[in-house]
Length: 253
Image 1 (tube, helix red, strand yellow):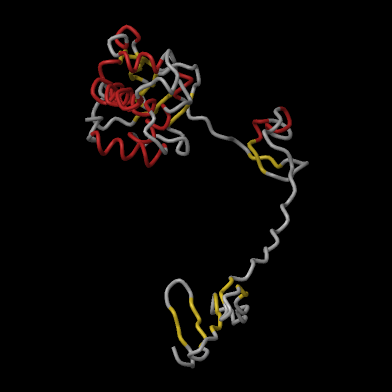
Image 2 (tube, rainbow, N blue to C red; image 1 turned 90 degrees about the horizontal axis):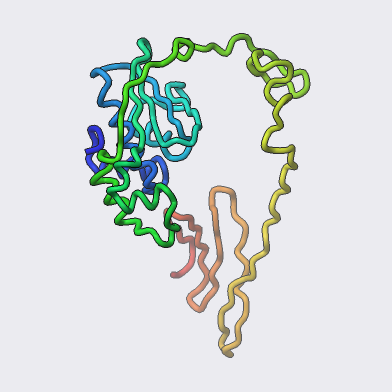
């Protein structure tokens, strides 16, 4: 069990949220539950992830804390550790990977310290080791948040940029963050509409065995996605078709 989830339920959530069965998210699930185990039942808590890779997704899968609601913060110290603390008292716990314990689990040890390339790793053995022994790779210690960290920070008044005309928190100064830090993009051009390519008409064999193009389909109204007229020995018929049904018009089939 990872918290209240079975292995199958947890892995299904990891795949749905993260996109693949990342060992970092799996191990992060054990970190989250190890830190939460020390909090009182029903406690309202916030979370700090000390890594921006994989671990924040484990938090968002297993807790109500997300980036959007502000209950999850990322302090990217490059450490694979997570802090859960009471919103009001600041009392909480920090769960981290314990390298002394990790040595007992070779697959996770080699993966965590990058001692093997991805091609050399046994992915199935690694994931199985984490699922079976993840809780044994962790150490937990109590923490107390600083007073300033518990204060709710409001965005304050809103200003309007005189250059671009967009609104932003005035605490960022004149022009907002974009005035002091260049964004990761530049102004682009609206791409031209793609020209519809002309497809070659399909070929069929005539009585002499030579290939010749089929007649072009006539245009119909916008309620008929496709229409084509088949002329053959049994007479012509108009067929209007879309993905859901086929209608036959006058003529012999």
